[in-house]
Figure (cartoon, rainbow, N blue to C red):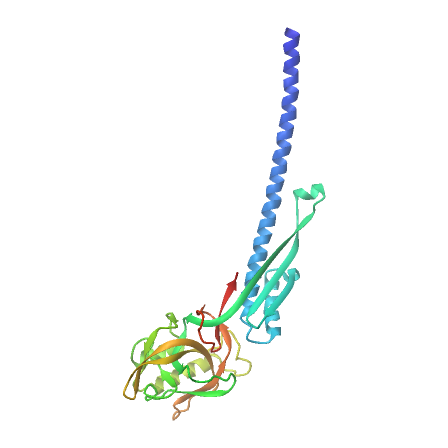
Length: 306
């Protein structure tokens, strides 16, 4: 019996060694899979974020030439270290940009078994739609009946009588008064405005406040050449498109917002001039896309698409 028990103990010791070896092998394999899986996940996440950034940034240029779109996409990819990952940057109907990325990710543990890398891919779509809500608008508006021909010169009349008649209006975004009007003209209104909001018109003498606001904007962006699509040129103002809301006799009391437009100031205002001269441009900027039926007046919001 003693010999029998000694043999059993020796067998159990041998079995334990085998089991421990198998368990350690399984743990190593699991650890290797976790490391490789985590590495793949991190690379996939980085690639997706890069695709999103490239699509959103490139979509800002959809209103311009295709070369402008591809230049921005390339710059974003290069900044994220993914310049070699681009498969396609495709523009659809001048309103949608699709960016597709793919690259091989080197593996660690799996390379011991002959699998040295696996491909990861990502795609992102960003589109532009007419703007329906935004911050930074100036207290100037145009009647929705005005036909906009981009690149043609327009004059936004801003004398004291403009709120009484005509196709252009001076608006009281921060309440009545020349000072609040000048602040919002100079720096843009810092609260959200959206399609459907009703705004009172501005009355009183605001010619001096307008001249100072326009001078500030031109001084901040003094060189007129090549500034039409600059991201940070203060000559570019976001103006309100409206339809009349309340009118008493010959005076327009309030307007209802129906959309937004971008206006590029081309000239300073002279001492005896009662209008701001410039051109309307197509541009994508900060804001939220409007609902179906929001008029297209050249101001677009960008969003990622499913």
